[in-house]
Amino acid sequence: MASHEVLRRVFGYDSFRGDQQEIVEHVIAGGDALVLMPTGGGKSLCYQIPSLVRDGVGVVVSPLIALMQDQVDALRDLGVKAGFLNSTQYPDERSMVEAEFLAGELDLLYLAPERLRVEQTVRLLERGRIALFAIDEAHCVSQWGHDFRPDYLALSHLHERWPDVPRVALTATATKATHAEIAERLNLGGAKHFVASFDRPNIQYRIVPKNEPKKQLLELITTEHKGDAGIVYCLSRNSTEKIAEFLNANGIKALPYHAGLDSRKRAEHQSRFLREDGLVMVATIAFGMGIDKPDVRFVAHLDLPKSVEGYYQETGRAGRDGLPSTAWLAYGLQDVVQQRKMIEDSDGDQAHRRKLNQHLDAMLALCETVECRRVQLLDYFGQSGEPCGNCDTCITPPETWDGTIPAQKVLSTVYRLRSERRQKFGAGQTIDILLGRKTAKVIQFDHDALSVFGIGTELNESGWRGVVRQLLAQGFLSVEGEYSTLVLTPASEEVLYKGRKVLMRREPERKAKAAKAEKA
Ligand code: ADP
Ligand code: ZN
Image (spheres, rainbow, N blue to C red):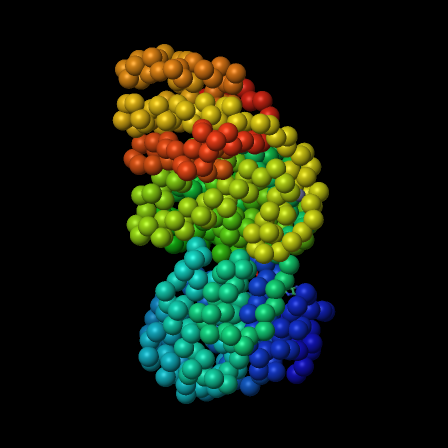
């Protein structure tokens, strides 16, 4: 059958999307391909159709073990002969699939990457006829990325064992660096690259200062997304449960999802989310990879994602049907402090921590930008764009102000706290000193005697928190150690001693109450 006929007869679609046809024909003709396409772009057909058209079995390597059963069931419903091999199966199930493979009764075989490290699996594959290798979620081979899986490194050998079998590597996430790394590590030097636009024009990107996160989230849902399906991402398991409870108490149907729930409950919540209308999933990032629900109308982040890749992938789960959708993120000073601390406390060597910090820096730059969010996002993925008119900075251009003097005040205070007292203080103490507050801790350490005490009355507490957050985001300050001590950086010295200017985003005035909530 020709590829068009397979598209129509087997999958029931009238036409290919984007680069699909070109990719499909290239692979059918035996070429290697590297496919970069955003989530929901239609990557699966790029290897499924060639697997059906070419002789033999299409072998699909995927790390998403939890989804294999569903994927295989969905294909079988379409009449495609599919099977999978992974560690969750009983030995007799596995031997049945192996027998089907050898008998040439399969069109597609899904494999977990660790299966290919088992010599037995490799020998099995050598005894059958292989149409192609598809390497899904190919960014997992990148040590620079956030989903690195060591098992993926072994996939570079496929080419040596099966030099005549075409390989197609697919990913939704790749900066230029990751892109090159995938090609190199998977030995895809001769592969044709297909790079789809990463723009998701129907998604409206918005990033707001976090003051009363629960209330802000509730307002977003009730005013713009009543009755809509959505995903709310939180950093901790505990907060997913609390937020879900809070939403339910306010009349919004919500379920928690995190790796700490037992697998039955996770599966139940996931399938309710897919089946029922207007359910909100409050989840850690454990949720979402491979979830194909077209009508997710909003993705909200209550905590700062660790990287732009993560943010893009998570927000990309909104609006797969192409209809207007919202990506909303609330972030505050506490997020920056917490994440820097998590990086500092993380395992791994200096180079690893530096990498994590660079990821975070790029995310912060996106949060603090005064330009179009989409332009900045696409730029991160090596693509250019025009101001979009559909993000918060395009809709309400943020004003900037010269924050050099407040920056100097914060940095001098941090300097004094470090050099004179040799004690470790965080943002809270710094701000109390600037505001001239005689708190118990200020008096205990004689901080009311510092020359900087009370020099910052031109801003209120929330104003100062914004300044500190922007200084952290722009690299003029850093945090360190168990108590999230504020420390100076080489860039802060330029501000203190060389008159370097600091531009800041102007934020809407906030009520004192909101500032208190952020502190809590
Ligand atoms: P990805 O793997 O890139 O995230 P999928 O392959 O899961 O995307 O496809 C996303 C959705 O788009 C699926 O529901 C799929 O059935 C649908 N789809 C893919 N290609 C086409 C097409 N040519 N015409 C119509 N729908 C398509
Ligand atoms: Zn824009």
